[in-house]
Length: 309
Image (spheres, rainbow, N blue to C red):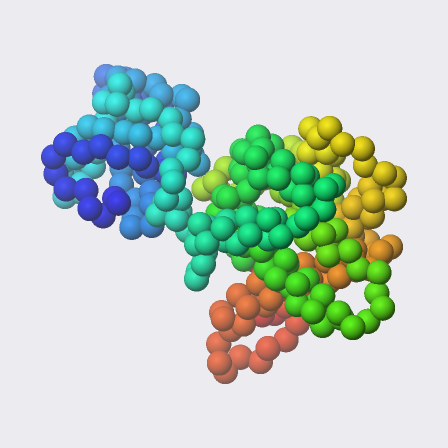
């Protein structure tokens, strides 16, 4: 951790929160200034006589060099040969703000258990393919992707957390209606729940400052999720009949777009389950930041920040 660094030689894996290629004012000597960050804090670092344009905010690097005091501040002097990109460290929770009570590891294990409980010969291969290829759809993957640009869902693991909680909701709903004569397909329910927001793997970029990609701006989230689903199905050597393909498509579109009118019972259940989880996140944050003596009125949003208007 950054808080453990002391003067002397060091080596470790860091998350880049800022990187600038600069030149000194006096002799125009080039250098690269990098700020590293983890949960324990930030630290400035420098690579002299090098313009490291390939390093950008949101990436992980393995770096080594010397830590020393400068103007009463501990800084890192890096060696350019000691800087190498890292795809993603195993202990992601140590590097960035993530989940409040759960960890990415525990959520991932729960998702694996949920998928393992799907016996369908159609839906199970789709979900297995997603788990095998989730790192190939964009800058984020299923373990570290955010859910939104807004703070209630703009953190690593927010998408994974949302998927798991929606799956929990639909399991409870299934139990509640087990004695009703409803044409429920439990495997389809889980598949819709897992895939309904999967397009967000393509929609966002930059781990440190969540912002939309070009696709995220131009294409609705529901369409992105369906595009990813089609890619998953195309990797399989199985035939998908029109009726089940229709139910899957309508379920994903209804769940990803709350304005969409559900056309199947599964689409209705997942739409309301995901909407409940999203609203709990939004309202929970707003209520936590409301003063006790403040009258609580309708929630409003300004620049993506939900507050008690």
